[in-house]
Every structure is written in C-alpha cells, then in structure tokens.
Image (cartoon, rainbow, N blue to C red; front, top):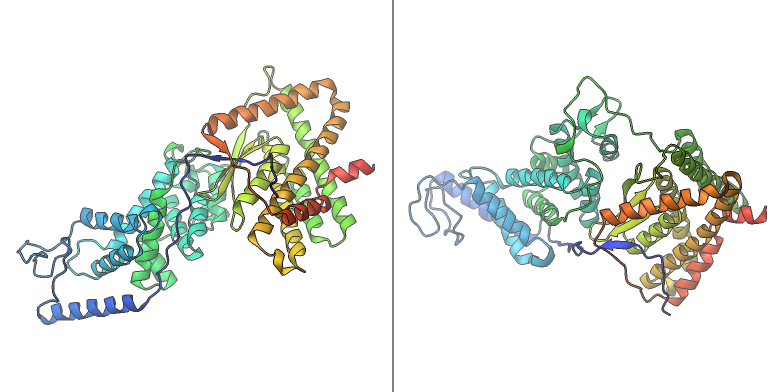
Length: 501
C-alpha cells in the first residue's frame, strides 16, 4: 500500500548525510601490543640503549635528534603545527565519506605514542582540546547553540562523548562570561546541560585542559581518550552552517558583572500562570488511566491554549496600525532522538502547521526548527510532547500480541498514519474554536489570523530559502490502518468535547 501524506515537513537540501559511526574504541589486543612497544622504547631510552627500528613516518624523530632517514635533524621536537596537522588527518579518516578504520587506528596509535614521547613539544591531547574549543566557537558563529552541539554528539556517539563536549561548552561559557553577557535562552540551555547554576549565577564544570580532565573523570585509557576525542572533533569539523536563531557570543553586549542574568523576554509570550495550569492539565491527562478523565483534562488544556492564542493575536493586532508584521516571531530547536526520527519530525510538523507555526527538519543533525509566535510555539511543544507519548504507547499496544508486527516498517507507518489522522482532528478542533471566537470578535478576526499566518510563512521562507519537501514513502498497510485507528482514540482535547456540547 502506498499512502500519500500531504503534511510532510521540509528539510534543508544543503545538509550533510548522517555521519557514520566507527567502532574499535576499546582497549583491544592491538592497543596492548602498542603499549608494550612504547614501554620498551622508553625503557631503552632511559638505559641509553639504541631505540627500536625507526618509523617510516617522516614526522617521527628519535630521542637523539635523528629523523626517519637517519640524518641528524638537531633538536628533536615536533612543532605544534605538525601535531595539529596529524590530528586533523586522523579526524579526516575517523568517519564519514573518508572513513578508513585501519588508517584511523594507525593514526590514533601514532598520536598515542606522541602523547608519552618526552621530546614532543606539546601533547596531541592538548592539541585536540584546543581544536575542540576552536570548533565550538566556530559553530556558535554559524548558528549552532550549546544544546544543539551536545545533542548532535550524543546522537552520533555516546553519552560519554557528549560529556566531553559539555565540558568544552562549560569552559567556553566561562571564557566568554556567559553568565553576565548571554541572552536568557542561551543560559537556559546551559542550565539544562548542567553547566550553569542560576541560583549562584555561575558556570560549573569544565576543565582547564578539557581532554585531560574529562579523561581522568571517565577513567579512560589514553588510546581510548584520543580515539573518542578525535571522532568528536571530526563530527564538529564536518558540521554545516545553521540558521542563526540566537545571537552568538561575538554579538553579546559587554559584560555587566554588577547585574544578574537578564530575565527572559515577556513581550508576546504566554502568561506564566496560564502555562503552568495547562501543563498541569496535560500531565494529569497523561497520568490517569481513565479515558473520560483524560479527555476532560486534555480538552480543557486545548481549549485554554486555543483561545489564548486567538486572544493574543487580537491584542497584538490592536496595538499595530499597520498589521501584524513579523514582530514577535521566534524560532526554537526541537531535538528529536532515534529511532524513527524522521517520522517523529513529520509528527511535529503536522502539529506545528495546525497551530500556526512552521517546522523544518534537519536529519543530519537530528533537530527540527520550529518558527512562529510564542503562544503557538508553546501550544505546539505541549501537544507534541503529549501526543507523541500517546503514539508511543499505542504503538506498543498494537504490537503487544503479534510479534510479526514488531518491525521498523510497521512502526514507521504507524507513526505517519497517527500523525496524519491527528492533523485532521486538530484541524477540525481549530475550525470549531475559531468559529466560536469569531462570534466574539466579529469578522475582523479572519484578516488578523490570516496576517499572522502570512507573517510566519514569510519569515520561514526568508530563513530557509533552500528547503524541499520530504518525498512520499511506501508505507506498511497494517501499520497505516493501526496508526489511523489509534489516532482516532487519542485524546487531543477540545474536538470531542465541543462536538458533544
């Protein structure tokens, strides 16, 4: 069965393909043999004995100052630039289009030998740490945010690898005086990453030497330390440019150490008390096992958010004589985890579109960018979180009694069909709520909502001019029908409550 889904969200066509994971980071027999050879070579140098046969690597020198051809080269110290070039070459074969496992293993072994070489001017680990800091700074200037970098590394590698980049982020935040200079959304991300303490207004974590400090904290073998850090470096070196949603450190105002971190912007944002109540209602709807009770809680939350969005639009329009414009439009990144990240992103796009926002999916980095007015972004985020939880539960229930259905194709089709049907139901709910609001505000409401939609579309097109639609996919028929049926049972809120009123 081929099902055409009209609500697929956009993706950036200039994005890179997903980076390939490489293994071989454990302390295997090859590493142990390399350790043994290095220990023997060091002992021979201490005893004054001739070293082992010289390497064919033209960058290697022995302790007597001879190069690989046996010529006297003077003081045997590799320059920082030379070691940096070796690190970069190792990163080029770490993964991706130039991935070469054997070459990467050899490169790590060579760097590990330099790490303990007494004649090396600067340790490779120090060079890798410097390059990581340089990459983080560059990524910030190219549209990346702290949470984006940590998410991309964790998604590609491991939690351990993400802790390395979080340590680098913490050190960078301290160096740029983010506590007193960064905008509130930036500080909120640092808080979520555990490197910012808002109660003391200080940066926590990080190391003077990021690689060495992280390695000691993780209790890693030197070869494993270099392998992981170079792989993370390679991913960051290959990261593409993103749309700038928050000003990078270079654009922050001068430090004001006499003031605490600036409070979040409130202009056009949803009332904190209303948001807290809506979240509480949705949490109760997700927690209860009684369907009628869940529908009551969710319906009330949906009703509050829909009317709040319309009221905010009317209020904003009244304050502007020349229409809505794009003032107040914001963008947020939503990090989406595997498995079935594409399908989850499509689900997010459906919910965003119904609620007056736009979503674009960047599959190579694993996050979507949602653009719209603050109230609509809040509504999209809350509904996506709640309904994705329901979809996950419904998918598990649909496959609980039939193992043959526990396949990726079934689950992908299930999520797409669930999202498509939810979109239809949300559209119906939106039309009903808008009709009720129009009775209160009259015919002036239609052009107001139309102006808001046009403003969001214009800002979206300007920010992402090179986007394209995701292609139609061939979907599993059983998963499609099961997903549609589950979506009919999902508690989206006001639809059923209004229809039965």
